[in-house]
Length: 238
Image 1: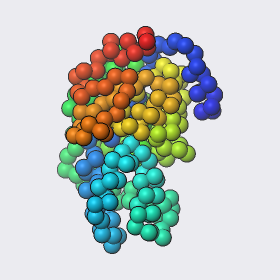
Image 2: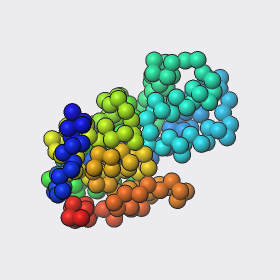
Image 3: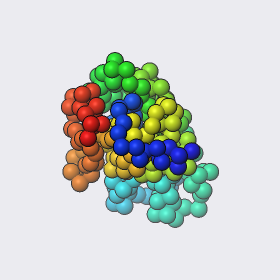
Image 4: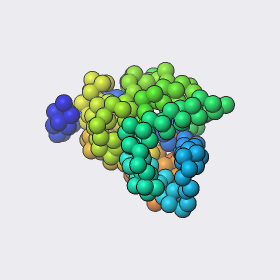
């Protein structure tokens, strides 16, 4: 199926038909929340973390949870199964952690952008390296679940970002050609995945401190106020 969808992207011209959002770092700022949780979770497992832990954030920003835990297993010489033990246990604990948070806000400006996209008649999907169990909880907590027709999680694909499979699946769910989609991402791996699916890309870098971590899309923005429907449509004239 994905090979066929990818083949369709060779057509020279398409109009904008749908908009796809990444979740973490685009809809909600969870990076500090997650890595604080992860450090505590590892400590609860009896693992003492040092400077090596800080490198995980940059190396695996936008990647799948399984890739991150493969690295954790290797780094700390763990005997547990990543897929059957480490990831399910961490996901369950993190979901409980999210539920317990007193409040969580969407990234400034993103709800207004979602409202503009919906008002213009474009369907929305959200694609994330997160688990399927966590995504609706997070989206509901920040008040944005109602905007999305479809959700694609890391549980729905065999390969995570930067592989394009997740974005090709989202286009299939939306019923549009991949080349008719524009993706809003914050991570280098995520932009690579969207570009691999032949989608137009908007890179949101408004949360970045280190410029070396900036993602580079067809459009790069620091604020969602910079993103207009006209600007998105213009990408398809190029």
